[in-house]
Image (cartoon, rainbow, N blue to C red; front, side, top):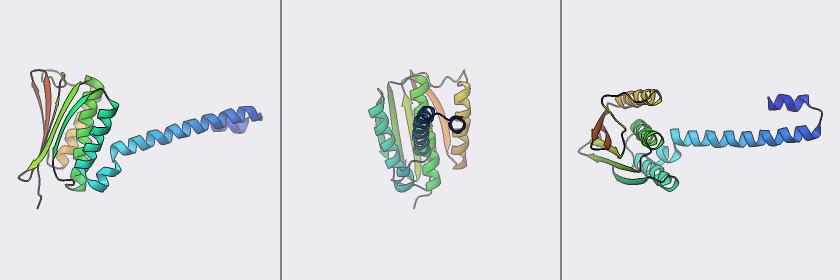
Length: 177
């Protein structure tokens, strides 16, 4: 609409205002696109692997948020490209949910690989999982997406609630040689 108005106008002052608005809108669109791209597939994930990508993501979050994180990463830098991508997206989505919808003050993330077995435990100090109640509609779709992606790499996901601590466990047998 701005471009159409620009071409329809004969006034230089109006055109200059439109150009300024277009520039601001374009810069914002580039910023949003860059942020989305980085969250979907950050360069560090594709170049260096899951461990550095998760470490970078958590470090950035802990600087930006008022949330305390405890992060334990005892995994190889890289697994496989597909496994790295699926696990990264699932873990990031769960962390974002803890932050956005449940206002967690503390998130514990313990991820390890031992004996060709990957295990991720995310814990939060809120009421994330209630076995008697379904998650809100928005998260329910995301949850199905997470579960579907995890199943595509033969991973399992389990939700637990223990004394005001909500826990999500992701497990995956690996074929690491």
